[in-house]
Amino acid sequence: MKKVIALLAVLMSVNGLFAQDPAFSQTYANPLYLNPAYAGTGTTQRIGLNFRYEWPNIPGQFITYNASYDRNIIDSTYGVGLLANRDVSGQATLTTDNVSLIFSKQFRIHSFTLSVGIQGTYHEKSVDWSKLTMGDEIDATRGFIYPTSETADRNSIGVADFSAGLLGYGKNYFVGFAMDHITQPDESFVTGNRPLPIKYIINAGAVIPIGSFTLSPTILYQKQEDFYQELVELYLSKWHFTAAIGYRINDALIFTLGYQNTGLRIGYSYDYTTSMLTNAAGGCHEVSLAILLPYKSAKLKKVSGINLPLF
Image (cartoon, rainbow, N blue to C red; front, top):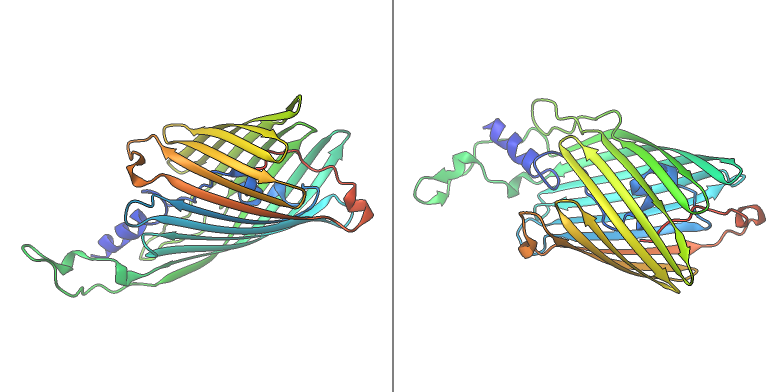
């Protein structure tokens, strides 16, 4: 029966059959989660809060919380960041917590900047075995009526994890590459080895001024074991407002609205499911909040920063 326990743990791990990371729809409202090389590339200090609620119409929803902070330090070519993430799956049956420290270095060559980022993470996953049902609890006619004889090997796993990324950008374009879970730590709850698969991320985009509007096309590709995501988006900004539409291929349409001023950004997005799951599951709701704190140092005030879509 330990094989049954292991199978249940894997099936419930995150969003599908294989263990995989949660994906945010507002990609650029959560840049440190996308790539550690984004740390310190803004023109201000950034505090970010993100909330994602997936499939609200079915039991066992997936809820993800995220908080981040980053800034420039020293001579404006170094950046640091803090990142915290909690993912709750299957009505709190499986919970994953991550806390990360990020360091980046920017190399500037005329109008081009290359940022290199590294990230160290404490990764913890815990399971509530009392919410799982086992095969020896089943009566053929009366259902789940017997106590289980199974015992859990452990309730939680804590491991070190590492990520790295590259980011190149100019005045109106950017391209990035990142690798998460480079050391593939073991996150198995039972006998055997279950390495956390490496995640590869490629993203690129442009910011194009057109009169009083700004148009921003972007692309994103990420792969983690047999799971992959291909996303194309188009952002349109005017004054303090941004609207965007995206298509996660073979999965969902993403609609985003955002408001921003010099010190605050607020965004909301909705994923309309187009896959075989259908939108009866309730799609996905996501909310982001960013607080922008100006630098006091005269040198840091001169940082040009990366030009990104805001949500």
